[in-house]
Image (tube, rainbow, N blue to C red; front, side):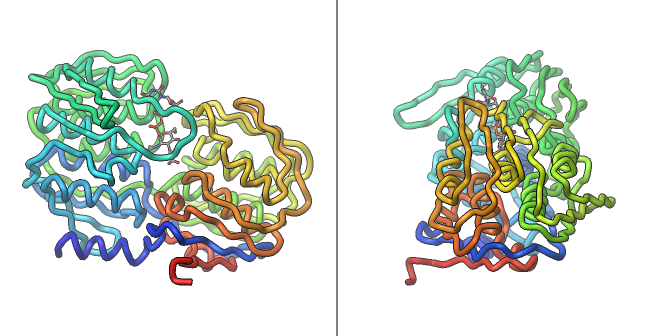
Length: 442
Ligand code: EPZ
């Protein structure tokens, strides 16, 4: 099957790529039933580039059908890989034919995670020319820790800010000890990628511990790498000569799961979120219980029962296992509907409250001062036109529309499609009145 076929698979579900699509939601319906969680976006966007570090055919299972994966399929094909699908969630990547270490297409510039191509291409070719990453815009998103880590391994780096290109090359990559000033997810993974094929041992201290880091380390070890300690703040990588292709199943998406759990809590109802890892959800589960939801946990599911009448709660985002910053906008909507005054403190990103103005259009009462938001619960939100200012803000607009009176119309659906597979289908199955409208065709 050619890449064309694989692109078609994404086109079926990712019509949101068109700029003029909006989600129309008629709110105030309870959510009931089951929703199955897809593979983790932030794991797959690291594992796909990891696969190009070895010749041969890697098979990645439980792949989410999201726009970032489509961007990676286009990018890898552009440098000589063969990507094809054996079914809708299983992709084969034949990295044998990769003959180019330049990754500077529009697809690369769209994604934040394209920075992993630096570590992966440098490891395989000792050279990489990669466009500066794009992705969600909530303040400055530096990559200095990525670059200093790769430099410590022996890379020489040239930054061309005029054209938004970073060039890296190394005669040899040599293992060393690297202390991260901030426990950066991206820098942890990028350094881990490059270190797998370095000579000697690399120790990453103050490493990030998110589930997608562990997932990436597990895939690398299936490829023959020697990575120990992923999931703790000290990761030890013993370099190997070569890696080989591997078959791997992506973990369920912690953030997609949390988004549906919050939606059930806010709208009221009885929703079983299936195909998740309950441990990954602990920081959210505690908060939903504090807000008054009934939570039943199974081996691979969490059931949320809510009457929609929630208590005010205080939340602060932290690195894993703390409350995830990627559920911060969604949690704000819960607090907007809760009884009383809540606080929400964003400790990871410098400016992740840009969505607040959109929530205010729906009647939310939120005051933001720097990294802290004070939220007064209101009895009702009124549907209107809003836009997704980024991926998780878009998820927050969806939750707000689901609980608002009347119709809410959400623009910039393409942001939502970057991280949520078939969101309108999954919500419709839970009883939501939601449709995707192509206004181009109107
Ligand atoms: C990853 O971004 C996720 N993206 C983000 O999810 C998530 O918000 C973030 O981790 C935190 O959990 C992917 O995994 C593709 P960081 P990343 O490096 O790696 C500072 C989503 O919605 N920093 O952990 O870019 C940075 O400014 C997205 O799925 C530096 O100072 O985040 C921030 O304050 C949004 N220098 C903090 O570290 C660097 O070189 C955490 O950033 C890198 C980061």
